[in-house]
Structures are given as structure tokens and as C-alpha cells.
Amino acid sequence: MFAVGHIAIGYLTGKASARLLNININIPLVLALSILPDIDLITPTLPHGGPPHSIILFLAIALPAILVWKKQTIPYI
Image 1 (tube, rainbow, N blue to C red):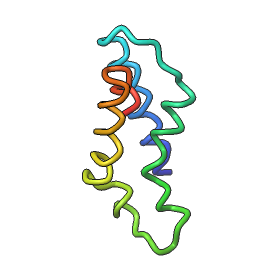
Image 2 (tube, rainbow, N blue to C red):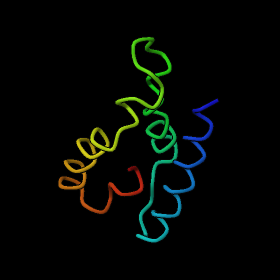
Image 3 (cartoon, one colour):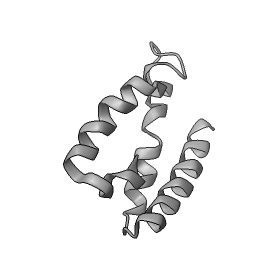
Image 4 (cartoon, one colour):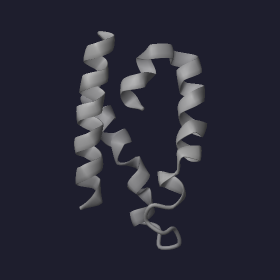
């Protein structure tokens, strides 16, 4: 159930940011990346909303990607 929200928000923000930046995006990749924070649902040791949902983990992944691929990365984040 949680993944549906992640997929919807990921799709909408990915499409909107790609349109603003005039970038073509890979929709299946956007959808797959949008459910990554819910990986905690299949691991019984992590509570939902724990480390995979944290801003620190997000920044640790996003900042290097932005440095390497510049504005092309933004719709995927």
C-alpha cells in the first residue's frame, strides 16, 4: 500500500521536473527508484519510515548523482 503513494508522487514529480528542465526521462526507472524508500517493508529489522526514508540517506545518494550527471539527475531524485 505504501508503494502506491511513492509511485504516484515519484511519477508526478519526475514528469513535472523533466518538463520544467526540458529533459526526456525513463519512466520505468522513475517508478522503480520511487519505491526504493519502501525497501524497509521487506526487512523485518527496519521500522517503516526509518533509515530508508531519512533525508540523510537521500542526500548521501542524491548529491553525488547531481555532481556527476548535473540537471539530468533531478527528475529521478
